Amino acid sequence: MATPTSSSSARQACSELAHTLNVDFASRRLAEALDERDPLKPLRSEFLIPPRKSYVPDTSNPDTPSIYLCGNSLGLQPAGLRTLVNEELDAWGALGVQGHFRHPHNRDWVTIDDHVVAESAKIVGADSSEVAIMNSLTANLHFLMVSFYRPTSTRFKILMEAKAFPSDFYAIESQVRFHGYDPADAIIEVAPREGEHILRTEDITDIIARRGDTIALVMFSGIQYYTGQFFELEAITAAAKAKNCVVGFDLAHAVGNVPLSLSAWDVDFACWCTYKYLNAGPGGIGGAYVNKRYANAELPRMSGWWGTDPATKFQMDNIFRPIPGANSFRVSNPNVLATASLLGSLNVFAKTSMNALRTKSQLLTGYLEALLLDLGPNSGFKILTPSDPAQRGCQLSLLFDEGLMMPVFENLERNAVIVDERKPDVIRVAPTPLYNTFVDVWTFVNVLTEAIGVARSAAGSAGVCQDAEQGLMTS
Image 1: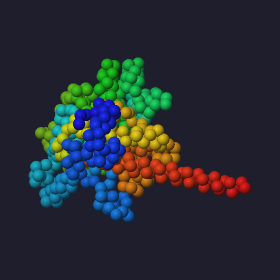
Image 2 (image 1 turned 90 degrees about the horizontal axis):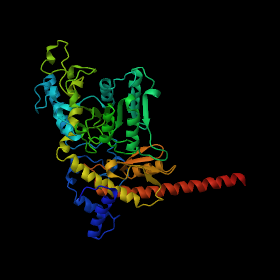
Image 3 (image 1 turned 60 degrees about the vertical axis):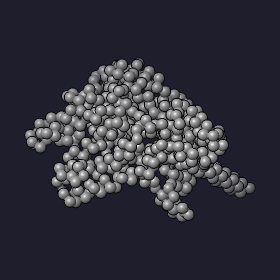
Image 4 (image 1 turned 90 degrees about the vertical axis):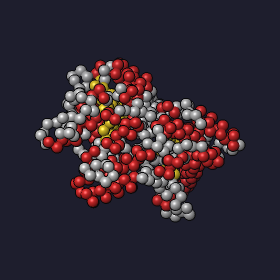
């Protein structure tokens, strides 16, 4: 099937298959047929899908896989990861410190992060020299802002989205204060227009065009964590460059989810976590990108031993000789177990491509959207995420009617359907193309429909009881 270029084309592709098979669009048989035609279906076996019994103790099918649609919060464990981590534990037990230079599996700890750089660079669209695997997401954001947020008396503002993930706001606010500025004056927050949930690209670029001479840094997320909006990073970067602003992106929800071209877009820096779509485990090691234009630049930085030339590192002469490229930003040796975990996932990514994942993702998410829209205007929720596949990844955010979200969420979990809630009224659903299936999506929609009915019935019963009680009190 061709890559959908609009929501309607995903529906059309699925509808054509349903017509060919002479089955209903909402039937399980269509979902099964879509899975049968999915070239990435074998990759699902590369992951450990949590069983129903993990969430539903009293079940007649305890070992049946759950419906896990929460990769936007924590990706699933790659099946090959345990072997890699155990190999590191075995090397440590057998060799002690010599594991740094005599690793039995040719992953000397002194250069272990070299094994995860090339595939990471492919995923973000960069040269290997532009990528470093180090620290964690917000730590990397701080380290990079030390180098790239260089305010002056006339250009000191930072442009960001109004509803950025709180950690980004904390980092930006603290950096602004560190330089002696008032965040209320130095931070420009772009909000959606009144009555809208999605930021319009023209509103972002318009602010840059009008106020760019005062903006030192344009700092956005790649995909908005709450709404699932995929920002037009190339257009934002071009607008910022036209006003000589530095550009940085937090790619936590974009990396491994959508194709990125950081080098081609001429982004200055970016950082990301690896525990969502990159499946490296809770608290996984972070990643950073620094444009090759800065490979040998004398930037202010927070330096450490792991960023100096490895050829002279052990001379212990206290002379910092930065490694050309992103590796100069490393400060300490990477966590070996966390790096091995990331390698376990990247070994799966190496079996496909971001373009292939994007093709499936757009069809899978488009199929989900079509099933949800077919529930009608009285479904109890509306979709916040853009309907244009080019403006979203694999996440759809559902905004529920008042008081409905938590009962629905709890009902989903009781049925071993794992999604993510954001109080007070949003559920985020992320069918991840590496391991989710069309049957997963079909099952979710059917359980969701039942959960909404149960929640509404319970609310109605509560209302009747409340009215009866009130009547007794006043009779």
